[in-house]
Length: 81
Image 1: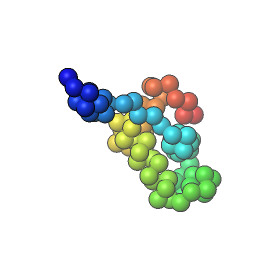
Image 2 (image 1 turned 120 degrees about the vertical axis):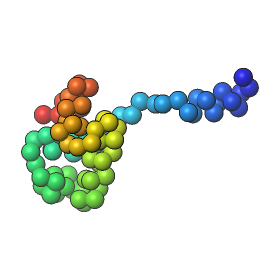
Image 3 (image 1 turned 180 degrees about the vertical axis):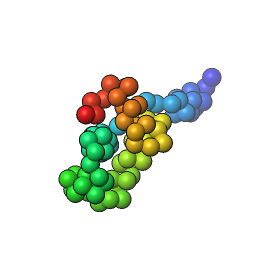
């Protein structure tokens, strides 16, 4: 296999997806029962930014909603509570 093909195949490999500290903070807040408005105010971000953090966290955890994301995060050893 030539060098160009090796590099292309390397880029196509699936890399582990991690949660950013902001995504984890957003999940923790939701797990603690805070509303999205309370959480956005507490984190000092807009509602749309909070929504983006949560959507990306759900995607990276393979979840479709908050309870599922929290459950998957706990199964992976993240301290959500």
